[in-house]
Amino acid sequence: MLQYLRDPIIRQYNDLAKFLQLPIIFAQTEWLQAPSVEGQYRGRHIRVFSFYVSKMVGMSEHKRMKTYPYTSVFVHCDNFYKYQLAVSPGRPGRKILRKLKSLFFKEEETDAGERLLMDNYTLSTNDNYFADAILDNGFRDQLLTHIKSLYGMMRLEGNTIVYTERVMIDRNDTRQRIEEMTDLAVELAEMIEAFTEEHRAQ
View 1 (cartoon, helix red, strand yellow):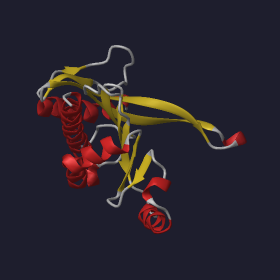
View 2 (spheres, rainbow, N blue to C red):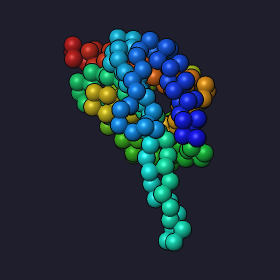
View 3 (tube, helix red, strand yellow):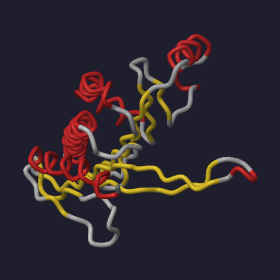
């Protein structure tokens, strides 16, 4: 039974490795752990891997341990100024909240570290000028192009762009979505580095 569950994961990781033109790496620790893909893609170091997290769910006597699959994409990025950025799918009602805030508050009176945008996603940052520049220089268009595939959160952590989603790569549509998010993370890394170089030259 466990081998049957593992087979589609291996097939999808093989296809992912072909797409990225990178070797597939098989885990040596736990028998059921998914493989990973790591190496140079589009001129920068990336890693795609899946893992499991166990959590206690339920209340009192109904508590039980439940295991969830997660997949992460790591993309290296030269983040010289240590900017922080997080993008996640929008939630119902956020558009209305943004409209109400724009009616009753001036821009400087809203939360400086969080920008609720009108395009079905939420963006948080520690530097609004940086975020606006990245969005205006093409990231907004990229987000709108790929918004239907943004199921998890993409964030800039130090010198790494991380995309994490609660999913296992065991189906074609899931693998294609992870491929798409890998490319989006690479695009974001290129925009951040271009912005950084422009401001370091000033």
